[in-house]
Length: 137
Image (cartoon, rainbow, N blue to C red; front, side, top):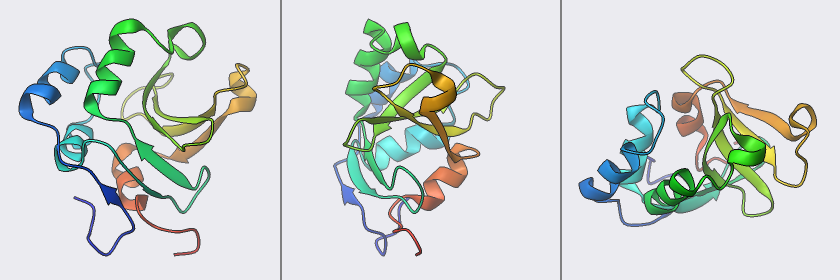
């Protein structure tokens, strides 16, 4: 899924049971490719060539727990968070528009969505193509 030539700290893949549990609490339009990424690497970290320049993939268990307990619902209800940059920004599907959802970075310290949401990729396929690439690479 992510080429060995890319800079990616890979974790062991999620089991089908773990992915099934996540699917049961995820929005229906989450793309299959996202679950494929978790089956390949349940968590992990690597660079992105665009802002926020680093991607920390949350494990399927972490994302399922966040969905169940509504961790981001109060301020970021229209986003499905699946990672961050390791420094205060969330990475999420932007569900304010129709699927396929764009991927965005959200500054967790600013609840003004006009100021805090930045586009990362137009969809998850394009996002996956960027994982593990340095800026300018």
